[in-house]
Every structure is written in structure tokens, then in C-alpha cells.
Length: 79
Image (cartoon, rainbow, N blue to C red; front, side, top):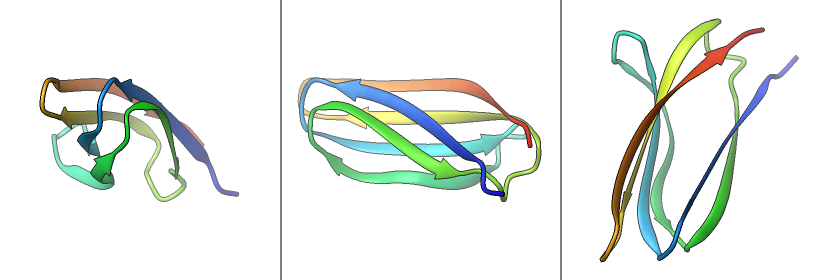
């Protein structure tokens, strides 16, 4: 059975976006996005079945001409 998680974010101008998932030790376990994206609201869905159950962090970095944004949030994976 696949488990799908979704992360939603938005920004006001075209930007370079990087979205990574890290374990609690700070090791990057997956890169979900690393590309230029158009402005607006985006939903990134990913299959988290391969991740062990537990607490993870995701970090999103948005870089554009007028807007630089970094946010880290916790997420819980349960199967």
C-alpha cells in the first residue's frame, strides 16, 4: 500500500525552488523539488512508503529577484 503525503506552498513571483526531506539527524533523505517554478500555489505529492515511520523535517528554499524565503517544518510519517 502506498502512502502519499502532500506539501503545499506558494509564492508571488517566478522562483527557483528547492524542497528537501531530512531525518531528525539532519541527513537529507530525499529531494522532492529542485527547479524553477512559476508563481502561485503549488502542491507537491510524494510517496512516503519508503520512509521509515517517524518524525522528519522538510525545508523549502525559494529564491527569486525580490523574494528569498526559507522555511523548515516538521512532519510525521506513520504507516
